[in-house]
Length: 447
Ligand SMILES: *Cc1c(COP(=O)(O)O)cnc(C)c1O
Image 1 (cartoon, rainbow, N blue to C red):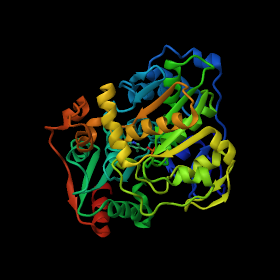
Image 2 (image 1 turned 180 degrees about the vertical axis):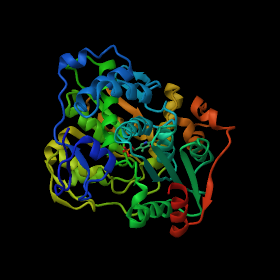
Image 3 (image 1 turned 30 degrees about the vertical axis):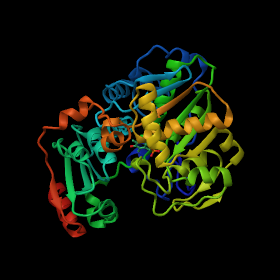
Image 4 (image 1 turned 180 degrees about the horizontal axis):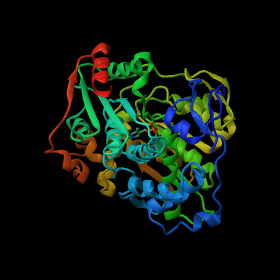
């Protein structure tokens, strides 16, 4: 696999380099230059396999020459040891629940695979790495869990002490071993700023610091797999399918775009956003304007005013967008609008949908999933297209109890993974918002 940078100024690299470096030297995002195509025969042969086997067979071809089959198989089976339910709403609508991983968020799919691939390459080169990550809640716990117990990698998570929920904090602080949790007496932006400063600090170069953020190609590729999976379980080639994806940074949705490019017959990708509507506006007008600051909505993992994966979407449709969001070459807008329908859903609509879904179908969804369902309903109302659709539930309803209880008046049951942490001991350290203190902490721990 050869990867290019969306800024087109960096040299092409192989998968290992893209995975370990994260961002291209010209600040662009790595994108695969070519993707394999899966034929009808290849796909049909996988139809009856369980999730980890389908994932392994797909990755074997996508990462051909980058990793040996035996290691890849072990990694994939280890990463995907949980269920991926497809829940029927009615005969042409299914919910794919991506919330059964250890942190009950779809981010487990990407983070667990990326962590294990990183470990594979580090062991091969006999290297060690420290992942620094700042989080407002969800990403940090998914990253911490993904790397938990792996050799050669240590993780330091910085979170704003008073801005994460008890449950989010416990997901990071009850792990210990190779995971350190640092409670910062500031805001998410302060955590982020300290992490960025550490990456740029020449004094810390020797500590081999790395990030595991959402723009890493190692997170994108695993996010293509569940589109294949749900298609295979629900459809027979070459019947078409529609996906509706609640989107923030558009990494999940990029996974769907890549799956379409690799041969899944996807008729339409519905990209549903909350009130941060810069992408639907861009698709209809061709004008891109970031939303600064982003709007606070109840689907809070999607409060993004400038999606980090947008440059990738634009690249794959022939355009160029730099890291600031400036578009120097417009993508093929007709093709983009032909493949993708994007719509914005308000908080009021989101809450109403959570309630309606529970009352009408006896199905629990949380605010992110609700945005996806409402987007699909908008799409169907406008187009009259009733093709079988899968809409993604990206987190477990129990992770957002306040909003859900508020909407329906019933408390969702905790999944096993969240129940387990309730009584566990917490390990964390407290630090001021002070870069020099953070730097001393890093030197003390890692030198
Ligand atoms: C991160 C996240 C999203 C948004 O996914 P993107 O890939 O950033 O578009 C949606 N729902 C939940 C629960 C998330 O944690």
